[in-house]
Length: 378
Image 1 (tube, rainbow, N blue to C red):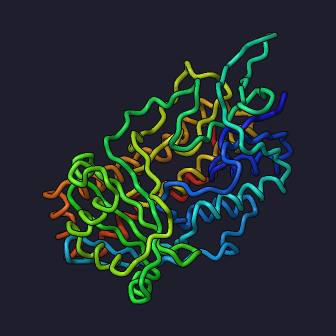
Image 2 (image 1 turned 180 degrees about the horizontal axis):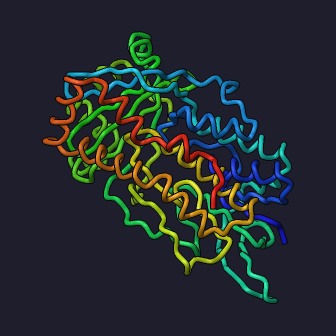
Image 3 (image 1 turned 90 degrees about the horizontal axis):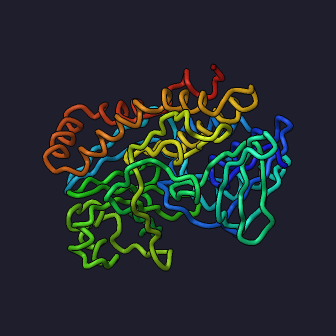
């Protein structure tokens, strides 16, 4: 039996695995993707996220991410720009996740790639509690502790108790025209439109990442066709249309996702199997509007590893994580609602035009507090 099993090799899974292996634990990580792959994500790596990665000896700068120092808010034909209270990086998840898995392997993590988890069972055989994972193309694996890091996708046998959102998420990349590439450089731009919002920034490849969430009504107006949906969004937000003028899509088709429980925070449950640590989007899902999802995922990974290494229970870990992030996620939810509803969006945009400092303030209010990050406390 392994000391620890980790289900999922994304940011949270690979980071927790590395921290545990560096502390001398035997860790097996199971990742369903056999090769590097894109994931739906805004790909904004905040200062908090970079600090979490530095803790396991990972240097983000070597990946060549695009420096991001400003935020631009666009609605209709108008824009507001403000300096962020920190410097972020634009790095594709395809590049970042692969580099983190390599870092985990160098730390001694046993990585099984290309294996889907068919079932997860909690057992108490021979008076020893533990988890047994059935894999599609390998022998079952068992361990006393399971770190669940399967992202926005639920694992069979351990559902996530959040209420799914009606919004549908999309992500793709564009090669912008030289003029628009220069205009976007150094910024993350948020586009507000009725029924959703979008974000765009440059990543290390020089492409622009475009992520957006849209209500089903917008998809219906576009007859479910992505090109028509994109045209509709550009009509609703001409600033987005300006960015995409002359742009060339670089993915054959956009990535999509639905039924994500935005605003979900896992509440400690005494009935949950002991030794089950939920990480990343399995523990908390912040609305993408504020760009702190990766930082929260990395915070959960470091915190779970610390609690386990100190002999604390998974219940104590979940209680602490909820305390660390719940208010930030609630604030992000309020911003997310304001962006989608025209009357609230108009009020928020008008206030931000009068007081541009509102934008960096909103960014600060939705971050994991400095005092909370990676400090063990029972």
